[in-house]
Image (tube, rainbow, N blue to C red; front, side, top):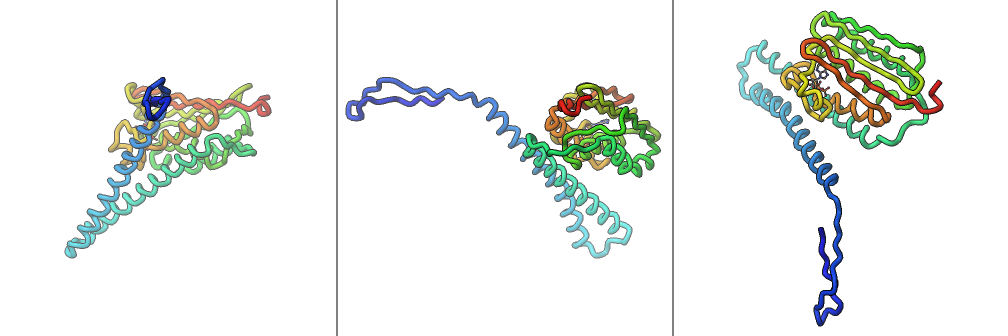
Length: 263
Ligand code: ADP
């Protein structure tokens, strides 16, 4: 609140009233806090791999007697941490790109059926290495969405990547894509480790992981679902997650269709 005294005459200094400006700053403060939390988190997340890389480089430089096997192990850690840095930077850039382009949709449409098929192919090696099967059911060969190709791919890839990452050996992943009168329903179901009830509402937060060690071991950045949430918002859609620990996890995305796409 700013109180500004109005003086009638500067010499006499008589106060005849006040102008009170009341501004609701709750949203501004909240946004500012989110921004500074994000910067603090990003800094921490970037520093961790860098500290590890510097440590191993120093050790290699100052110990000329390290045997070949140990040297290789240290170099592999440096490579792994550099890759993690790369993924983090890519994810941060993607998130900021989506946030800044939230209202601008392209004037062309992409076929999400093809995007899901291509994404399954991309994940094929990783799924096979864990003996995981991926089943894809869809009710139309062509389901068009007004979105950039790479952005829609990112949405499907992040959800499928998680389903594979958090599935056990020999797991089953089921993807369903349905176009009905007014909307598109897209769901990914896995029979993996599941998410505890108390964590479900937080998994879309930036850098939130149920089990940080497990996520990092699987190559996660903690930004995958934050990216997914923002893409869904940019499509005016909704996302929901159902899960039970040790049994299953299912992400359901609902995207409304524009009038011309309804049939
Ligand atoms: P990460 O890079 O850690 O995978 P995400 O933002 O993609 O980050 O996901 C946030 C957290 O949600 C993960 O760390 C994991 O604990 C949990 N999670 C996401 N998808 C699944 C899934 N399909 N099954 C079990 N847990 C999941």
